[in-house]
Length: 94
Image 1 (tube, rainbow, N blue to C red):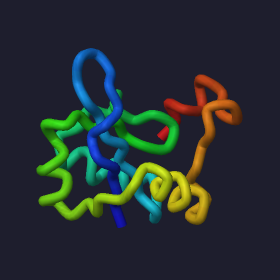
Image 2 (cartoon, rainbow, N blue to C red):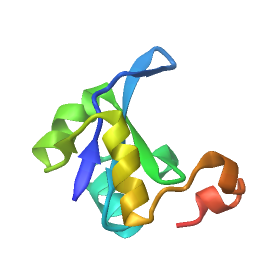
Image 3 (cartoon, one colour):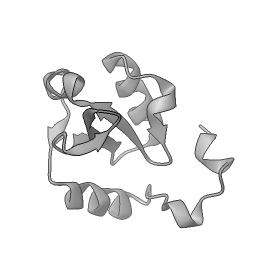
């Protein structure tokens, strides 16, 4: 299943959401590709999705949950990659 939070994270004059999978990174990458999100939007365990793609992500099937729920889902699935535990090179591995 794919999940995202509300676009509430400001960066470069835009608001952003976080998109995750509780199944696999392969599922996450495939969904992001269908959404038209560039691979550079992948950050360790999630994609950063701009607010203008939020409705498309929901239409494609992503479920909207609170930000804390995203973290819990990643932990429960064993897919959480905290910044302090990931080397810079590991975050680009697919």
